[in-house]
Length: 439
Image 1 (cartoon, rainbow, N blue to C red):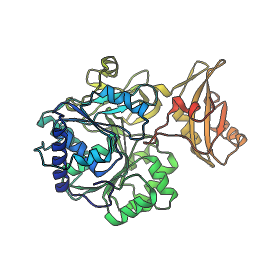
Image 2: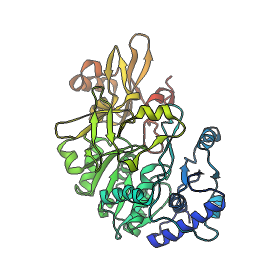
Image 3: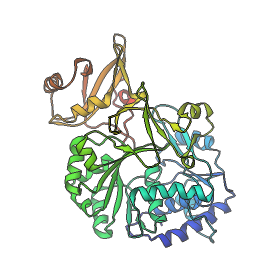
């Protein structure tokens, strides 16, 4: 079963996960060991991931677009017992009998993160007992009120945590899923019309493509539209809320490592820019250095695979950080400034690119923008901005003089046709000058 507009029920998914568990065992992968998947997203991949997790095996899910030279270090680092890197190998997992599997996944997939700023780190969670596994997955089901009547549309690649988590949670609640394959706005609209899903998860890029196609209103049939993965530009979010419905659009802030906050559209409209309050069973703290920390239940703890120093650096008791910066208002609502790695220090002053982008995104004629630093002998780092749109340097100068303090005004602008992002819509700010061919 590959790409399909067919609704797959929880009972069919249960059978296929049992078959995948059997196929993984036949490869000699025992509970606690790892099996690596490097294939295109499909319903079969999701069921293989679920079958692994529900038999106590840790699936390592890797972006199939990686070059061999990029993939090999991950394969070697993960110590995977078996590698599924072709459609045939994936199909073979379902070719024989079934195994008995636990009611809930006993862990989370092992995914690699931070490859945009250095060597990728594997994020791995311990194998849980049945009681803690129930707590882990019930938390997600209860957070979004997944139920047997839900049909979840999978729009994002399955080598990211959110689509895996939300899809499996829907199935655990007795709901169904639809996995149409690689995102194409016109095909997604067709799938929505034919299958009438009730929930989905999108990145801002997905939403922008649906807006550009003139079909964002089709998502109004959903009861829940979740978005995350990167900052959603103010104008885009307002369009989505107006077209889809204020009670249906929710944002969450999290990472491969763990979840931090959730935000309804009502909360966002009252406090533009916020990513909400701490999600259930979490507490948020922001230190004097503006680093964001979140508490974490014991059943959701994690570590960096084979990297104890990095793990120790990320944890303080029950709280962890991924290096993001922000602040909490008096009511406990969180606002992001960016990543510590994104911080630009120019002339000895700390500058947060996200703040400047937020201002520039509200200028008429600017379609997309990224702000970043470039090494500079005079300033240490020179503040730069890449712009997509139909504005001139002179127009921008007038706008920033009215809306940004002098030290926050970019010293150089680059006008480009598009801004490079990763598959989940994330900016590679530390490599932006290289990616744009200006360094």
